[in-house]
Amino acid sequence: MKKLKNILKHWPGLYQGIQRIYYALRRVLEYILGTGFHEWLWRHRHVGKGRSWTESYTVSLDHPHRFFLIDRIRTYAPFQSVLEIGCNTGPNLFLLSGLFPEARFYGIDINPQAVRDGRRWLQEKGLGNVSLEVGKADDLSHFSDKSIDIVFTDAILIYVGADKIDKVISEIKRVARKAVIFLEWNLDDEERSFQWYDSHWIYNYRKLLSCHFTTGRVDLVSLPGDLWDDPSWKTYGAVAEVALAGKDMG
Image: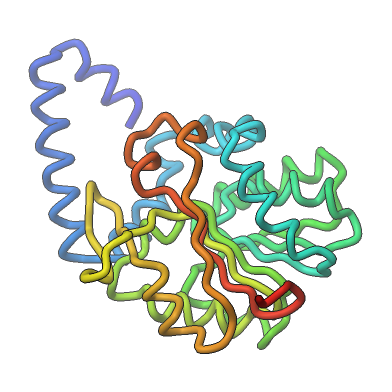
């Protein structure tokens, strides 16, 4: 794929035209096919981008959004287990494992190359309390009911369409014991439950989580504007969480 791109770049007009057609077709497929198309793209993402794609995650440990997310997670300490849905190579879990060496951390990701590279990287770092597996957000069957203290996501549910979001939330609810925490795009709209925008899904998390969690408090915290340069994250970025146990329920 990279070789083809390099060849096409010798003809800028042709390259730009193909790019426009590709992204227009991709957006149509994303909307029509829903989550399945996004799953296919992420499962094979390494094919077009190569090893540099997974490496970009392992070198992004100092991205400011990670510390904001971790600060939300650590408010539920002490805890024994944490699961990240869509972990890639595991940078969030790497940071958490250093702060909570006695806890056990799990990550699942749909991309097998990310999991392989993440396992290698974590092993090189000497971390024995982090486990990565290939898996999907709507199938957490290898985790038993209420077996994980905290389940969290980091920019993953923006790729889960309306066709699957309820199943994903139901699975997370089944597994989580203490809290669920989502760092995603939030739709602050009293009328709408979701919006499809720029190839991403934006959910009204207060509505969505209130439907699934009849007990527990739903909290929403907008992300500070300086965490991301991306204008969409500045507009929609938020942490949505539900405290199930072990925190002041207020």
